[in-house]
Image (cartoon, rainbow, N blue to C red; front, side):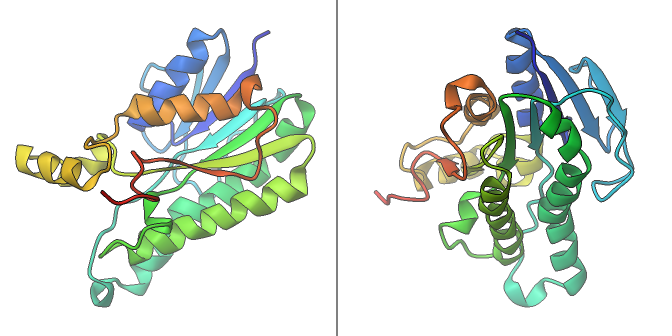
Length: 228
């Protein structure tokens, strides 16, 4: 049976890989982004930002994924109040507002799932990550709160990757030396690929995970839990 999935932040590398997997399984995938159509989706909308102006969708939605994120890495004493607010709005507030807007669509469907995308930085103390760690920690709090409030009909989970080879992380991986250093810091000695994160998101959206809710699942090569 075909389901309808809504992907917000639809032009990220992980979002497009997730959409590809969902479409391979015969599902209908709608994309929303602040950028133009990527050619990946069955239906696509461009919006100005992730704080409002969401398009109305006149059908039940079986799953929603919120991808927008930032990598604003600075020493703590150099982060401005404007940057703290911007990171919070993009990573956490946008997730809350977009989910709120489409909640009636989600309630119309069966086997419904919401997935947010956090970061290993909420679990492992990393220098220069104060702003992003604050914002993503708020997102994880939203995850477990909504999981309680929307049970039993809507499941809510979160995936927390470590560094992944995407355009957003380009500044951290744009030389062989940077890639090698990142691989050495990871217990599995690799940098994640979009497919690694998309595999977990697809699982959380679909029926195989029907007894999983309120979880923050690390997809990080063990970085958040172990040190070798």
